[in-house]
Image (cartoon, rainbow, N blue to C red; front, side):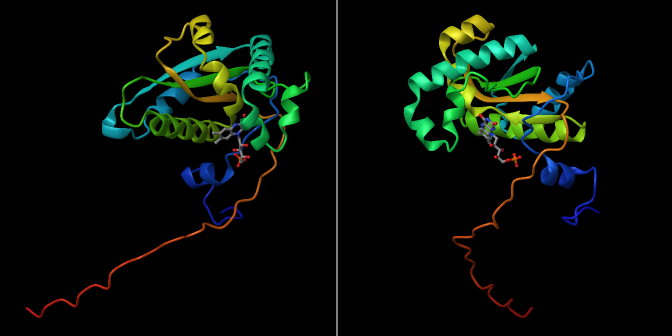
Length: 204
Ligand SMILES: Cc1cc2nc3c(=O)[nH]c(=O)nc-3n(C[C@H](O)[C@H](O)[C@H](O)COP(=O)(O)O)c2cc1C
C-alpha cells in the first residue's frame, strides 16, 4: 500500500503516481517500447468505436530541439491570448527553454476527419498511453504548447502526416532523470448530485 491507500503497480498506482515529467535521462527506451505504448493507446474507448486516432513518432534530441524553437516562435507570434492564459508564458520566449524538456521521443496523436468525437477519443488514447508508460517505468509529458505548430498544414506535410489529420495531443516519452514533483489536486467539486427517492416496493 502507498500513502494514498492504493496498491503499488496496478492501475490505481499509475493513476495516482503518473506525473508530467520535465527532466529526462539519456537512457534510451528499449526497442519495441513505442509500439507497446501505441497498442495501449488504442485500447481506449472511442465514440461508436470509430478509433479516429493515428500516430506520428518523432525521435532525436536535435530534431526535437529544432522543432521546439520553431514551435515556440510560432506560438509567440500567433497565440497572444493563449500566452496570456499561461502563468509562465515568458518561458516560451526564452531561447534556453526546450518545449520538449530534453526528451528524445515525441508521439503526436492525430485525429482523422469526419468522426463523432475525435478530440475526446484521442485524449483518452493519450491518457492510456501515459498510464501504460508509467507502468513501464517511463515518464511522459503532454506538450499542448506544441500542438498549434504541429497542426499547421506545412508542418504536417514536412513530417509526412496527411494534412486532413488534426494534431490533438503531443506527448513526450522517456526515462525520468530523477524524481518528479507531485502537484496537489483539489478535492472533487460536486456542483449537483440529485436522485429520486425510490418508491417502496409493492408487496407481492
Ligand atoms: C492538454 C494538456 C496540455 C499540456 N501542455 C503542457 C505543455 O505544453 N508543457 C508542459 O510542460 N506541460 C504540459 N501539460 C502538463 C500539465 O502542466 C500537468 O499535467 C499538470 O501541471 C499537472 O501535473 P501532473 O501531470 O504531474 O499531475 C499539459 C497537460 C495537458 C492535459
